[in-house]
Length: 257
Image 1 (cartoon, rainbow, N blue to C red):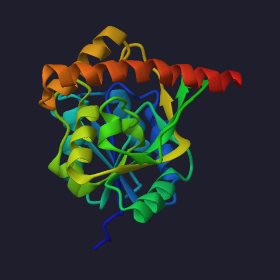
Image 2: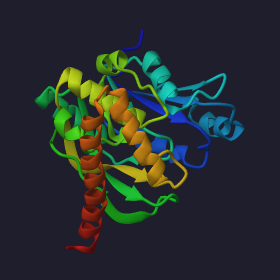
Image 3: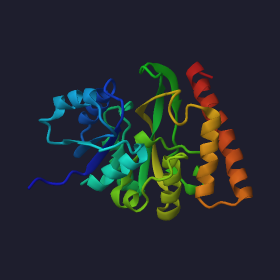
Image 4: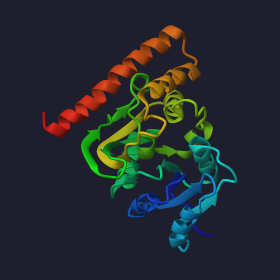
């Protein structure tokens, strides 16, 4: 009987045959003890052919949803199948720099945090550098997260019992943001590694690509948290301010100001 892995990396896969190889290979260079769960969210022959290259690697499990159920439900399904003490999420068009998992494991052990996120480097849709990096604070609190989501889903390492207790839901909003808020409120502070271990592709077609639509989804997050109208409005105003400042600061760092 093989030993259970320390980390289970959950990768929801949908129309990603052109990018997922880079994603998987970036996990394979990590030094931590891990397994990789790739879950295809629908029929995809091209993805099947890519995954054939990894069929001999016992650390990789490839599964298919019988129908399209969305990224959040697919992540939840992956968590249920996972065997690791920790869960790491990674989207199939993003990738990690070497040393990401071990650095996070070390930080979580020292801080006893329930989750850990890293800074992210922003890339163009075709994977080219933009020169912009979005930082993350060393201490991630529920209070600060109410006005600024500093957690990129593909950077997260989280204790399995926490994400099992608080699965992702409500795909009509930013379901990952909603989940982090609930977890931080329930379990206490998270921690951050302010190094751009996550290489994050920007997309104009994703849920956050349209700014007006993204703003509406952020508002829904506060509603699903059960906030009153005044509390929701206050959080939203702060969120909008931080959103402008985040990208302005990244642009200033790029120009050396």
